[in-house]
Length: 116
Image (cartoon, rainbow, N blue to C red; front, side):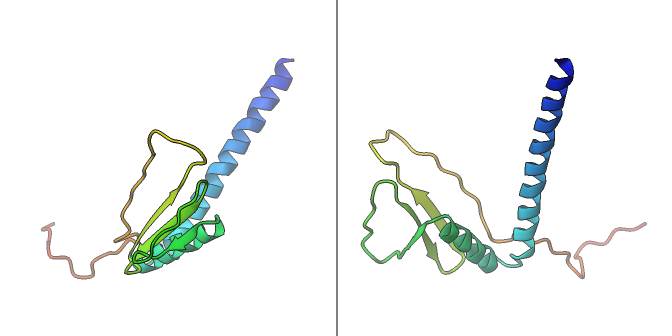
């Protein structure tokens, strides 16, 4: 009995570890494919399209429907996505981030010098 529970726990931990590894791989791939904010926004847009989101244009009248999933971009350098619940709702959840510098850069000629 104890042996079976131990095997089940090990299998559960292994599955959780594999999920984290996959998430990390996706994150590293996203960063590698996003050398500029414009690339990051395009990659986000592709992900949203794959998840069934519909693009809205800022200057159009929006026809929002319950259970709809939408996104809007501005200047190819920012993106906002949202989904609408089916029925009445009393609030909303929001997450935000910035995409101005998703890449890591090393300045070739630093302004500061350190004496050894």
